[in-house]
Length: 508
Ligand SMILES: Cc1cc2nc3c(=O)[nH]c(=O)nc-3n(C[C@H](O)[C@H](O)[C@H](O)COP(=O)(O)OP(=O)(O)OC[C@H]3O[C@@H](n4cnc5c(N)ncnc54)[C@H](O)[C@@H]3O)c2cc1C
Image 1 (spheres, helix red, strand yellow):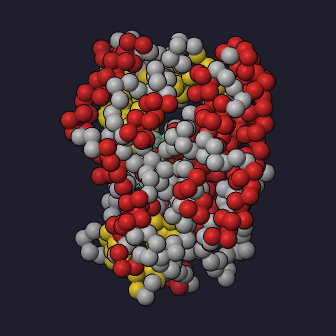
Image 2 (cartoon, rainbow, N blue to C red; image 1 turned 45 degrees about the vertical axis):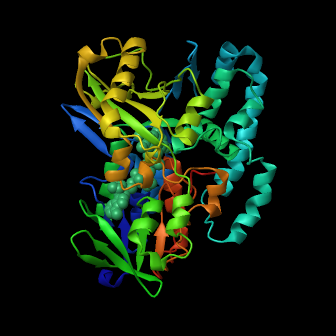
Image 3 (cartoon, protein in one colour; image 1 turned 90 degrees about the vertical axis):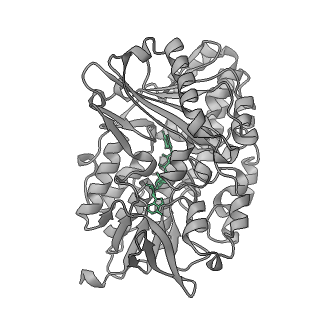
């Protein structure tokens, strides 16, 4: 009877799109997943060259159970599909004054590291950890997988958000506990992982610190690409259809209800339910005709704040640098001012802070023998800045490589085998993200929960949104949670076995 099952089209095979496609297919819907690129994964795509394997995007895996539960929902064993190892340290942070901080998930080790780094801040750190736990319990465990489709749902949580002091920024929140400026940076950089400015993102995002302590920072053996490949395989095994190189150009609407999508080239795919994993801003602006939009008008989209973008250099070296940690954060001379340049002034600064990824520290399979795989990531303004990246690209790349060669990777240019660079243009032109933003809608309080584009569209019946631009937001735990929210919102089929759409067995 499978031909009678309702047809769902999912637009985009990012992690959010893959997750909702697996969820709905395993619930009995017939799902077609359309991805414009020639591989699934979105920001988590993979570049390969000469034996080097580069995960393009997410590398810090927190809450792996959010991935594993997809196999549970499908009645399979996740361990057979993806294996995770916990990292220690999670991050090595190089302060600009030469001090180093090994950030881990072991409370005693963390306290000892704080005592070594900033002896006066040990008590403050412990209090910070306690507060981060309280925020986590409210912000992640209670609100993270709840739909915010009505004003009422927002009003209900408002008192709790006020009690938690969510109007404060993460940096201000951290500064209330510790005094050392470099330690404040160590404990406040996390919003950057989801596209937020630590000086503007709500202190609710301080929950990330506790989330990492609770569930760890992990690495998937084979890289994040192995997670994507396993998810695509699971979807196929469940009978789902993945169409690569298929760009959706329009979400079809008739009498305020979706009837399917139109692909580039003109073909249409009828469906009673459409889930967009495309950038939320792009979805409303470019995939739905203006006459079908009452709230997400072009004007409202123009007034929405989008996250910063990223400049990333992927490179392979013919030697190893065993002294470089898996995840390094290299803080530049300025913190507040640099973030101001990126998020507010929108200028390309002369200085930078970098995230340096060396996956071969954990997983030698990602490079030829005796070699190292790296990427260096620099947050930069989104395309609203008017920077001409066709001109700036090589100059900026050279400055970053010079810095790395001088301070961290001696002989880098001599040892370079391969490299590939992406700029904000890649986010706009390949991934169809408004303003080339790397994390879609910026996570500030006034654009959170109900104020974000809703998971169930208020414009078009039968349309749902997953991914970074909707609730709860960007990052792997965030976008996997958007799929949990949408799973709850989409009606159950009569014969779905009564399964709970959010298994959540690991969440407690
Ligand atoms: C360099 C980088 C590093 C990051 N590091 C981390 C990290 O360490 N940890 C972490 O948790 N998060 C990290 N993130 C954030 C995380 O990767 C993203 O928030 C998350 O992967 C976004 O998933 P998504 O579901 O929103 O889909 P996306 O990855 O945005 O995928 C959307 C997909 O939709 C496709 N698409 C768009 N429009 C259409 C259309 N019209 N038709 C067909 N297909 C379409 C796109 O091609 C794309 O494949 C990082 C992001 C970047 C860019």
